[in-house]
Image 1: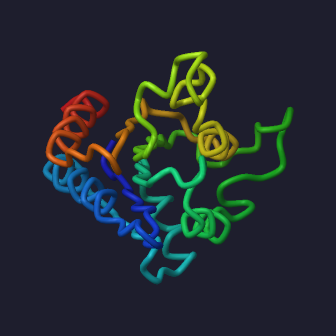
Image 2 (image 1 turned 180 degrees about the vertical axis):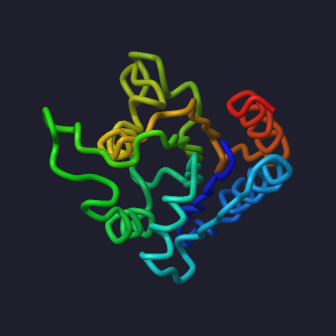
Image 3 (image 1 turned 45 degrees about the vertical axis):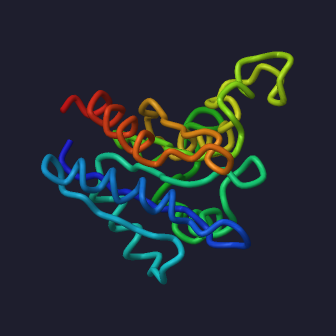
Length: 184
């Protein structure tokens, strides 16, 4: 693996300023840069869809850093995917069965998410997510990438960032996660 694309998918709206996610995206970039060629995109900046497609073609792995908004991706990140994930580039007609037409085979994806939900809201049948794990709650984004042929890397999540933020501890945990995932 030589090239990693880091996509910062925060959205600055209302109380959300995007600093936590921008900071984690920068931390990932800085931590991985001595070992890999790093490409970056911030979905709040202007971008050219064709240039973004070329970044995906170059990348061996893609890391999405984004906040979970209303249990899904922020609207700007969804818009980015809608604009960039082109037919006959990311996916095509399935050869055998539904979901088998992905054209990004050999590429890996990691979701790094921030949540207002505390970690104990997951994996507990009596809690809000009714026993779902973080990975299960992220199913739409995960399946989007499976559909395109990506292989999932272990995902990363930060919880309770509105009430109990601890950026330095979360940055350190992210670096430990990246070190383990990318065998550094």
